Image (cartoon, rainbow, N blue to C red; front, side, top):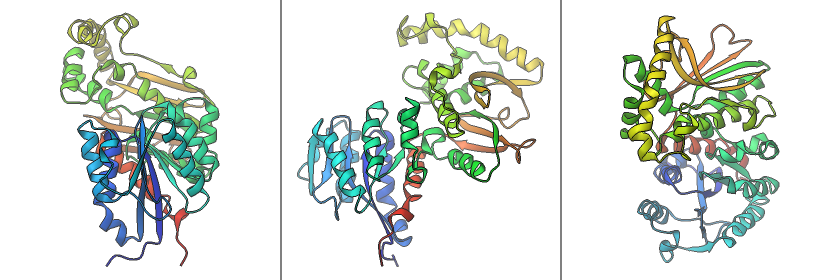
Length: 384
């Protein structure tokens, strides 16, 4: 029998792309589970890049599950949020009024029932909204890395009340990387080093090269499997890994920015987006990288090592790029598109804390976001 909800969490979702839609589906499908746990998630608003759909009554109501299901179907089909008007008790606001409405909800609910502002977008444009939410006592949950990887002052502001922010999915989808790092730090065990393979795409590519395959062949296969972005250079440039590394470095207390991270791109500037189209890169540019990559793979193999694209975070700085690592290490044994993170500290000096598993995918990332939302439930306990 479902118990009376002990915690009711009002949620406004920013971004209803792949991760956002999967999150809404998870929320709807988990209603019976959450009811048995005495938790209720009340979605009071959903926004995309141009508008916001909000419940008529944000104080005690929300967007019903039928409307949320229709919303997911509509956005999957490329329809605007305005197509949902008339299907439930809701209102539509377009930018800039939509942004003002989010701030209004944060102001009203943040100081009464509480509010969780969830950012599943992929833009820097949400930073101001998130900072307003923090000022109004709201909780924030992020899958979007960009607000945490811009100016250090923004990171410091968003993380100023650490109990009210969750951002596990910014680094490893639903892998407990952030939670593990914060637990080790909180125990008084200083972390000296983090080494991570944080790109499923590059993890797959580098492990496949061990079998003697050409770099260009492996990248094209990864693209056909849906592992890469439409332009594989978005993965091969290493910037996504660098953003994740920056979040971890800042979590360790390093007041650094992207400019302080040495990032190795797997293609030269003459093969970059400013020099040639995606089509030309795939047809002729990629093959130009085969020889040099083959030589690096062979050189590593002669020493009993393998090549992995990793971030290395130490007190002396943060590096992102190719490293030769022992074949029998956790990173050396990596296969497929899994992520692996090694955490070294006083207690984990000779044998690191290793976290491994699926670190990408809309479904997996959305599950991590939902877990982060639920981790805030004790802040939303209703009075008996």
